[in-house]
Image (cartoon, rainbow, N blue to C red):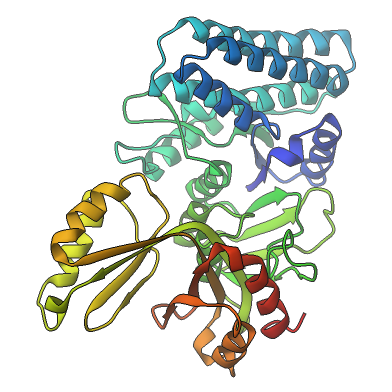
Length: 439
């Protein structure tokens, strides 16, 4: 069994859906195709939901009308037969009737999740109609019948495995299945989701549950590049990464891969391939247990970082000081990205400002608290990176004109992380590309 996930840009136009068709029918291996919402749809649904939540129902109604018009136009190009158009338009009517009904309902978080689920439901149902029209044998598997999370929002891999296997047993002769990425049911049985970028997560969880031979993530980029191609002109695709390297890059800002996607694949040793829908012959990036080589592979940048410094003369030799600091962040379920310590100060970084004021208030009895916002973490990632010859020299020579706020080195065999002001991000990435990668 092969799992193939296609992102929003890969299904964003009828022509792109045709490219997806060519890719999924290129061989006769059994496969499950995981689709995201059409590009732009999730953002539109977020805006609709926000407008309803804030009481701007007229504005929400206008946005719903605009989105429906987009889908009507999409359908008109996607399918050509009268029967196909009738089925596809009926699907659009069903989902937009729901969106218009919710304009009259009191807003809730559960309703918000229902709104956000419409994108994946629409894309998969329309793709199914398209496959029907060309007589491509397939089954549409509703993700809401097998994909689930527990009360803490964590996927229930055991339950997913059992439910999905039972569903597939009903279709022993079918080789092509289509399902939704991103959406799931929570512990209360309500429609929920795996957060933004969660279609990658869906694909990885399905691959793990079925012990698939490979999990392919198809986007509009030929694999994971050594640097951000939106900022740096000369970048190259990284052909091989280990799960550990890929996890570091995904967590610290590489946009092509959802961070949570790595652990199911790593846990069940399922290779992950990052491929380009528009350039299917490009080798892309293969991620598995073996790093294949030692040294620097890529750099990633994570924005929206807040640095918090706790300074206290009482810290010297104070048993339990760090524990008391970490307990504050644990209380507010706020993850720490980086940490550095000295005799009199501890500096940490976070990427979630939701509880920042409460955190600061609870840290103040421990010492003087200072915060710096608009920071960026630059992470240089590779296998056994500490063994790379002159890596620190090359790195800091590249950044000699950029003030570095924090450095994290040695905590991982795969990562050197630096904290800089976000204003220097572009300069830093370009300088590292030249000084470290020689590009």
